[in-house]
Length: 609
Image: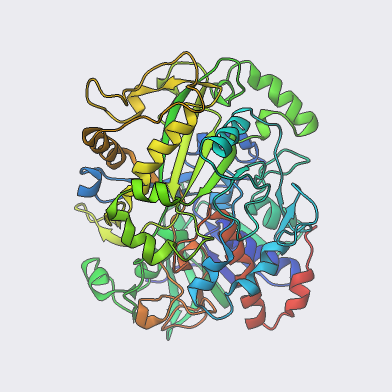
């Protein structure tokens, strides 16, 4: 069946998320004559408040949101039969326009662990510095000060962060460090006054605005929103174009017939952890069994496509907070403070509008006492992976100034604070594949793997206990939101409820019984979720090791086709993954420039207008 060819371009990007914007923007800035097309299923984000006003990030995660796609996983017995849901960005700029704007960076050793030529940390650190303008502290050797992405302390402070650190450095007996994003520091408390927020304007610092929209003067860089990529077009296993249609969610009334955009030099798949493997499979690249059940003729046998799904396991636990403390709650409920804050933000870039409520954290590793308390199930994983890698945290514990759990509409209007803990290197692995539903429509066969490995739940169980002890010692503590804590047995010393204030810093810890421990484990199986950090489904590994792309991002078995997004990460990274997505984009831009004969020195120097 023939489809109309709308235009010819040098490079076509199948997907318009974070990495696509970085790569396309860098290449266009270096060589404005390159004809570049970005196809994105979601809508434009240019200057839309829900994307540029930092405080609005929870609204992108609302169940009615169209700025993300909610991927429903297969029910899992490890989750008590629950079907987990993992959202991903569905807009120009992808997750960079909808995430929590938390600035963390993985230890440098994470990239060395990949074992991929050209992706060692010594090659990547210059790119980490190149992409950022670090406004928090001057003169830091691992940070950059002239890049497109702004990192700042945001619009104002919230007091809960100081309380979290004060308790952490006394009761929890950890040190304080003013920079835990130096690529090696671990197991110290720090302020999270480092956000992907422009310190001058108070706006979110995302890839769409800072790599693409700022090049509106270049007619050769085009972004077509509302376009769903169906498959890659090949001629003798050479990628020559992309077949796409109007996206039914973004453009419900548009013609759904297919069109083709031809690519004279290269096609780059940037569909993300869910989109990239399924685009490959719809194009005939993948495991024989997956393609056969969907009636797709195989072009290349590549069984690693869609495998190696990895994520971080996160739990959010709410607490009651004092009336006088500053939180995000009133702002998120749309109370009168919202208008006052907007006026200040519009005039100065300050106020809670330029806040995300996440102001303090620890990249946590257990000490000997904690490790013993965690029990024997975690010990093999500790010895195999963590023990001799002192820069790798088991989890991040953080304090959020506000309610970030169930929908705001169903809670009492008051102040809250939320304990967030998420594991950074879970052992469990899942997969993402296309499927055909009963009514012969395309679906997704998605297995998260959450808690499949018995060691993965242990740090979560411990994380609940430790963060609860920290929170109940914070000055703003007024008790637990019992409905969102474990269902402890009647009469338990761990029973939850309101409190008049914190316990003494030297008060004894809560003593948990075996029944209490089981309640905590069941609680986690019922509510553990993604940390919105999925990766790995088009892994950059050898083909023999179920890899999908090589070190230069080329898809095995075909030519003129690359993948560039978080799906290429072969292993988990100990960070909120926006920083890694940006980094992959910068490295991909260098690789593509070399392939096309563009001087990489010029690319490095290319400045955005």
